[in-house]
Amino acid sequence: DIVMTQSPNSLAVSLGERATINCKSSQSLLHYSNNYNYLAWYQQKPGQPPKLLIYWASTRESGVPDRFSGSGSGTDFTLTISSLQAEDVAVYYCQQYYSAPMNTFGQGTKLEIK
Amino acid sequence: EVQLVQSRGEIKKPGDSLKISCKASGYTFSNSWIGWVRQMPGKGLEWVAVIYPRDSNIRVTPSFQGQVTISADESLTTAYLQWSTLKASDSGIYYCAKLRTLPTGISAPADVWGQGTMVTVSS
Image 1 (tube, rainbow over the protein chains, first blue to last red):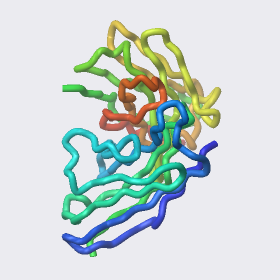
Image 2: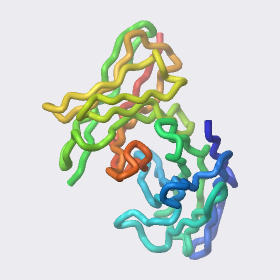
Image 3: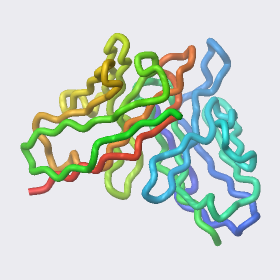
């Protein structure tokens, strides 16, 4: 099984500041056939289902603000929120979809306002 | 608008059976993988199972093998998850989610989610 490990488990950032969440996979998520990284990021606000933010490690989903960006390749990935807004308070999950159907998630990172 | 609308929450006793549903609309149901994700209270996300409605190709995460049954009815554009014998450890919120239709097939992110069905199993 591919294990996804996020860091930190929780994070407090001031409004307007940058937030950075890391995700490490136990195996490379870079597929030889298409050179894509099979990595997605989701945002889950309290009482709501997860929402897809980023896929292929760096492709922003339609409608997602451009302050959200994804980077990384292989086993190390990062979600960056360039200027934190109040509505960004949520739990963020990375997910690998390389070894479907066991598309494992990270344990989540709780983002709060400092 | 693509939507997944799930059945309401359920309170059951250990040993009971249960079938929850997920009604899809706004896209071609047969042509996209759809599945279920569990979130136990205060915890993270785990894929349970996925199904491709067109040919009923099913994949179940090993830890859920033999514990649940996934199915889909193309005529009703509805996916289901069922248990024959519930345990307290089956409690949690179950989300249905549709996989993005990509050339990579089942290897795709979940781009649309239902609102969640809370299942509570308690004596």
